[in-house]
Image 1 (cartoon, protein in one colour):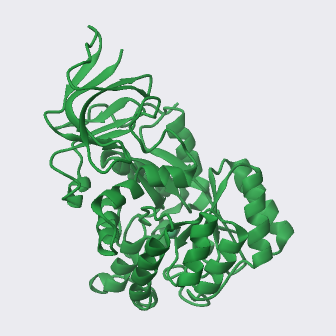
Image 2: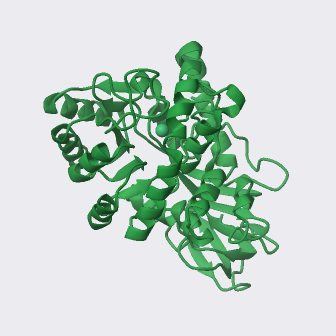
Image 3: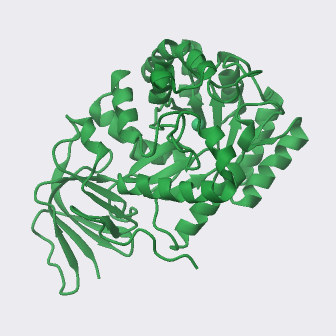
Length: 407
Ligand SMILES: [Zn+2]
């Protein structure tokens, strides 16, 4: 039984514009991208008439925290709620992402390795949700950024052991902190402060790569970004204080920037007094430099991908459309922001056959009314979602029950 999508315009994740085509989906993959009207469906095939809608690859959010609520102080919420309630919240957040057309997320920090368990449950088909590439706990120095979900490791041997521990736990990516952050901790943490040493970052990255895992480094200040880039990490998260020279080095090394622009604007806004004061003050101090850094990276040819930090302070799941709008405000074209959330993101994950619509690719698709190339806002609510060939969202209702069964 195949799923046949007819009467739509298909954007393949790479091209400048969508083109009329019909799609045949079979066994979770795209079997054919055919000229309109040329597919002859069989009796037991399911045909979906798109009535002129645009079909895009399922979206990818490169930076989320599924355990977090998107409330004013999400780390505190987890502390109060404990492991069981937090696990349920993470599952609900994952499903909210999927129904909004985000068919893949990279989760770069969760207490108790919850995002790894969730990734596994969804992979086994026991729960409906997006594909999750999860770090679980993060590898940080003692006193480093986001201690609530960090494995604290000091010295090369300890850092290597921590990477092995996360790989054994099932991490699909290794997350580390090369600098302090804005929200992390009230005291003893500054965005400009470098954290893991160059030797520790180098050892961490080599060990992760030895096991085929990519490395995401939280890095805001210039020194920490430079340390992470020199260590060969794959993605710089946030990258607030870039220099032109650093941007050139990233472009030459193929280091990807995942800036998460919107979250700092949200935290800096203060949320009508809801945001913790220390975090608002730190975010306020970085917003202008952040936008300049994104522009610098784009000018230097650094690949920029879309990640939101969804779940963090006043940024509930899903949040990708807001980040795409924020990236547009930093000078990216509408097509480039769509690439940053599809083919570009998949390239940064090292996954071929993801984030594109072509024969053999994974059948993760979204359908939208209107033109997302002129109206990025439309991506807030696709009317149709297909994940792994399964139609999970239709026009008026869920096409399938969200929870499959938990064995
Ligand atoms: Zn984050």
